[in-house]
Amino acid sequence: MSTTNTRRGFIKNTGALGLGLVTLPSLFNKESRNTPEAKKKIVCVGGHPDDPESGCGGTLAKLRHAGHEVTIIYLTTGEAGIPGKSHDEAAAIRKQEAINACKVLNAKPIFAGQIDGDSIVNNEWVSRIKQLIMDEKPDIVFTHWPLDSHKDHQSASLLTIQSWIQEPQQFSLYFFEVCIGEQTLIFHPTDYVDITDTQEQKKLAVYCHVSQDPPGIYECGHAAMEDFRGRELGVKAAEGFVRIVGKKESNVLIS
Image (cartoon, rainbow, N blue to C red; front, side, top):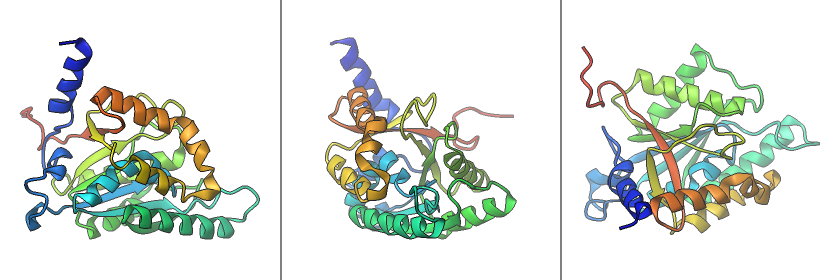
């Protein structure tokens, strides 16, 4: 057996398993997905419209196909994202694009109300985001990798991390990547999801964000990311994630 195949097998059998409350592979278990207790609630927190779709849209679509509920929380409405448009004009356009994308993914959109390019991390916003997340009663939450070059991505990540720190036994937390190398930095996945069957659905969701130049989004490394993560997993296309593990979920005993 080749080294590559051995590594792929190792990733399939261990790297995608995770630890703790709810793991990604358990959500796609064909034997249990149709039972009421197997239905889970998923929340994704993104900095702007198009971030959740481009970062983990294939996984969100796959989760919906498996019968789970998916909610996307957009920290901002992309107010600064359309040159020549006022903040109000851009927000209206980008909010509708996000709603359209959520229809493609069959997800529920929530808009947190922060301003694109002027995101805030403070105690008030930790409480607000935590409340939005906990109102959904999630089993798994996805958000940006905190080592990201975009301030709004960092804010979305840090607010979600603080929510998880305060409720570590309520949901499992996974980070996704966007525009690897340009925005998301030093990202090494612990978990992978095969999105071969939902890759085109993800692309349709991303292409709902007409104002954001969808071909440019894919040229920013997303097509290469799907291909490369797929190669790591040994499938056509995949998305990679980093899972954060708390003290109570770890196998390490801390005195």
